[in-house]
Amino acid sequence: MLEDDPKSQHITWHHHHVTRADRERLLGHRGATVWLTGLSGSGKSTIADALAARLHDMGVLTAILDGDNVRHGLNRDLGFSPEDRKENIRRIAEVAKLFSSFGVVNILAFISPYREDRDFARSIRGEDDFLEVYVKVPLEVAEERDPKGLYAKARSGEIPSFTGISAPYEEPLHPELVLDTDVLSPEEGAERILVALAEKNIIDYRP
Image 1: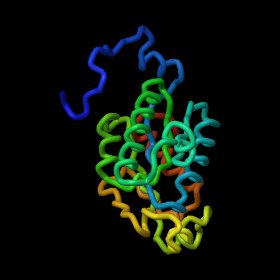
Image 2: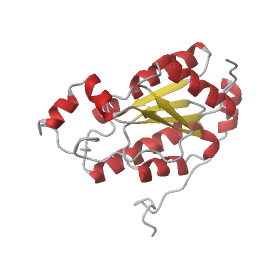
Image 3: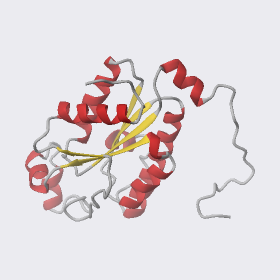
Image 4: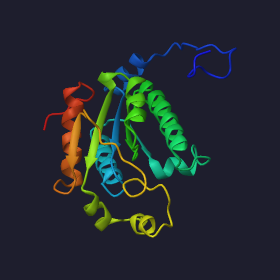
């Protein structure tokens, strides 16, 4: 058995009458995953909200998967060890894959600090359906913002294994977009993602 094979052996993948293409024709757009990665406080969730609002106004069906929200339910059993971070990303990548197959434009806001895990998320989606967006900000700016007070707690030792302080963040090497949020507003970031989605023929959008 391969390492990534399901533990259950007596299972069969079922193909259904209504296909992904059928759903996308009904919706009038393709399913896709927009993966926002970056440090805590970089602006991922704010950009995700701005993008979802724009797409909703355009009649595009969206779903936001946010790091904190997912850890309240689906991944509530996971901590922040390297192993748990890996499993956290594996699970939400599989959820995003399912949502995309339903014709939904997924917007994911996760620190997702490891390249290997983000590459896995891309590998199960396909290049035409996946946009990696690096929400980039200098560490000192993220610390100045510190909207949740997490950096201060990390600096004091209250939060161990905190990305950017006591745990690494591996910058994307070849993201589809880099959004420098120390100079770009959330609305400007959302606009750039809309253009990228249109270039991939996922949505019909003309600035």
